[in-house]
Image 1: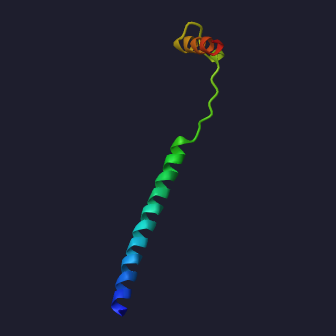
Image 2: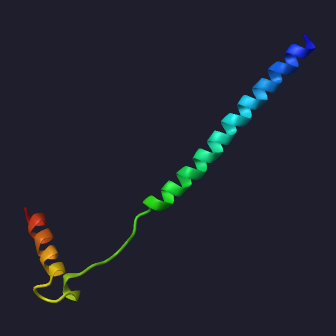
Image 3: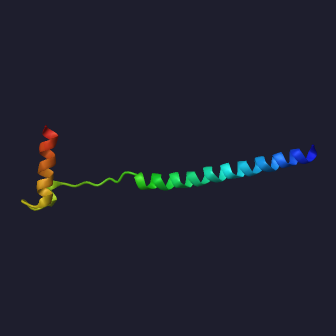
Amino acid sequence: MHILILRTLKIISRILFACLSVLFASGLLAQDAYQVIQPVEAVMKAKQYKDGSNEKQIFASLAVNNIK
C-alpha cells in the first residue's frame, strides 16, 4: 500500500510539474504578444507634405471618406 501511494504521488508531481511548465511558458508567450500589440502614437499632418504628393492624396482620400 505504501508503494502505491508513493507511485501515485510521483505521478501527480510529474503532472503538476508539466502543467506549471506549460502555464509558465504560455505566460511568457502572452507577454511577448502583448508587447507586439501595444499601440503606437504617431501624429501625421497633411501640412508636412508637398502639394500633389502621394501622401497628400492619401490624406485627401481619408478626409473624403470621413465626411461620408
